[in-house]
Image 1: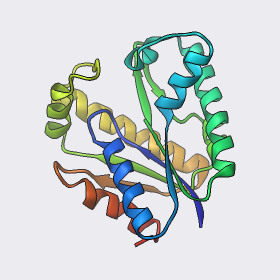
Image 2: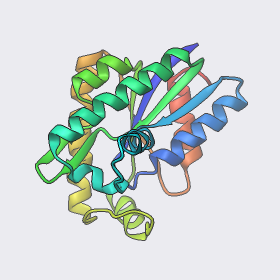
Image 3: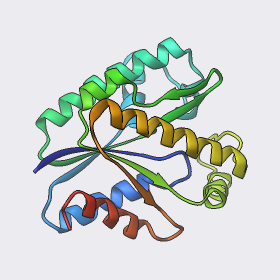
Image 4: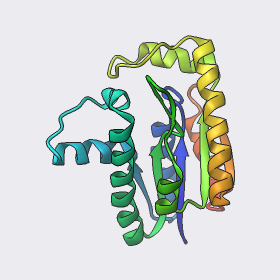
Length: 195
């Protein structure tokens, strides 16, 4: 089995924790799984170009720079996918909140390179997401009121619908309630036919 799954979620949903849990459970089931974090690849490319930038500052760069960086990252990840066995999980965002508005995290040219078989939206209750963001001292997050979080969740769903139309890949919505990341991971693996 060789599949590419894009797992997305707005900041504070716990998508990276869920991705790591999917990887662990899939390997226990005997399915080779790798997780590629889009933002980590972005940081590597920026460093290669001599552009030191904090992770949360990237979304405030010019839109042209962000589009070019998205393309470079997608090309690098597409090369990794070609060599991968089993399930490749791409951990990223469906939308990026920029000063100009919401930018698609997966524009058409990126989707053409990545060719996902499934799109996953990791979500949680707005109050949980807001609380997680306020507690996260490791990142420089934007405002985290429940109304802001609700808007971001809605925009993320709109973008997921557009990605599904562009790729033909189904969209799976997974709820990552507090302390239930293993259940969320199992939900993804069931949808993939692993368990």
